[in-house]
Length: 469
Image (cartoon, rainbow, N blue to C red; front, side, top):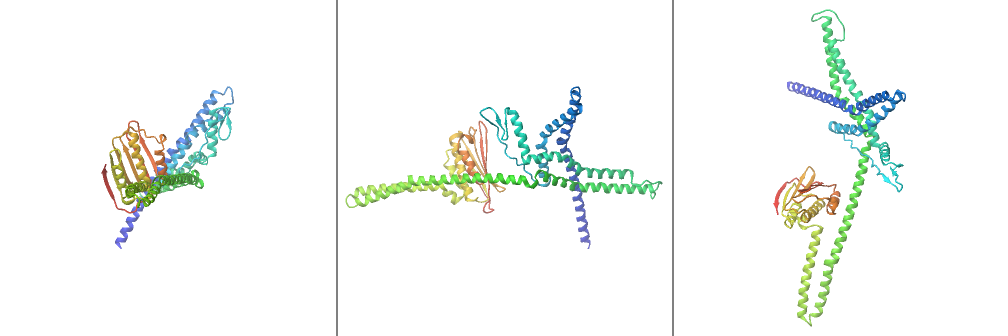
C-alpha cells in the first residue's frame, strides 16, 4: 500500500513538473512569436504612417493633405511589406519545424523568362512592354499573384499579426488579472487581524491571482499549438506544398528513368558492337581456319600445324576479349568480393598512387555497387588525365542509410562538369538511385568529389579496412 502511494506521488510530481516545463516553453515561444511579428507588421505600418505624414506636410500646398497621405502610405506599406513577405513566411516555417516537427516546404511555380522580340519589346509571359524594367516588375507582380504559394505568403503577412494578438492576448490578460488580484484583492473589506475581512480579502486575492497566473502558464502551450495549426492551414491549405513536391518528384523520376533507359540502350549497343567487331569476328575467322586445316591435313600437314597454332592464338585472344567485355559489364571481382576489394583492385591498376579506406557494415545492392564502382573508375581516370595530381585518396563509408564515397586528389583543381561529359555522366548515373554528386575544387587544388546514395545493406556485420596502392 505504501509503495503504491509513493509511486502515485512520484507520478503526480513528474506530471506537474512536465506541465510547468511545457508552460514555460510555451511562454517562451509566445514571446518569440511577438518579436517575430514585429518586422512584418510594425515596419511596414510605421514606415507607411511616417511617409504619409511627411508627404502630406510637404505637398499640402498642391494637393489635399489627407489624399496625399493616404496614397503615399498605401504605396509605402505595399512596397515595404513586399520585402517581408517571404522572410516572414520562412521564419514561421522554421518555427513550426523546430517546435512541432511540422515541415511546410515552399514550392513555387517556375517564373517565365523575359523574352525580347524583333521590335525590342519585352514579353513577360503575359504581355509586351517597351521597357525591360517595367516588364520585369510586371512579370514579378503577375507571377506572385498567380503563384499559390506566394498568395498564401501574402495572406500570412496580413493574418500573422492578428493571429499573434489573438493567441498572446488571452495569456497576457490572464497574467495582468492575476497580478491585479494579487496586489489589490477582489473584495474590499475593513478591519485588521488574522481573521479580519481585510486579511481574508488579501488571501483570497492572492489565491485567485496565483490561480489565474497558473492558468495563463498552463494555457501557453495550447496557444502556441493553435498558432501552429492556423499557420499550417494558411501556408499549406489543402496540402499544396505536398502536391507540388510530388509533382516535382515525379518530374525528377521521369528524367532519371529516361537517363537510365538511355544509358542501358547505349550500353547494349556498345556490347553488341564489341561482340560483332571483336570476339564474333575472331570466332568466324577461327571457323574458317579450321575448315582450311581440314582440307590440308592429308596434303600439307606442316601448313596445317601452322594454321592450328594461329587458330589457338586467335581463340586465346577471343577469350581475352570476352573476359574484357564481361569485366566492362560487371567486373568479376565486384560480383565475387564486393565493392571494397573491387576498388582496391582498381587502385592497383591506377596510374596514380591511390589509398583506399573502406568502412562498410556489409554489401550494398548489386546495382548500387556497380554504379559506384564505375563512377570511381571515371574519377580515377579523370584524376590521372587532367588533375596533375601525385596522390589520390578514396574513402567509402556507410552512415545512417547512405553510402558515401569521397575521392580526393592533390592536383591543380578546378574540376567543372560543364567542361566534359564525364562528371555529368556520373551525376546521371547516380540520379537513377536518388544519389547526389558534390564537387569541391578550387584553383590550385585539392579536389574533393563526394558521391552519396541512399541504400540498405544486407546484414549488420561490420568490415573496416585500409589499403594503399
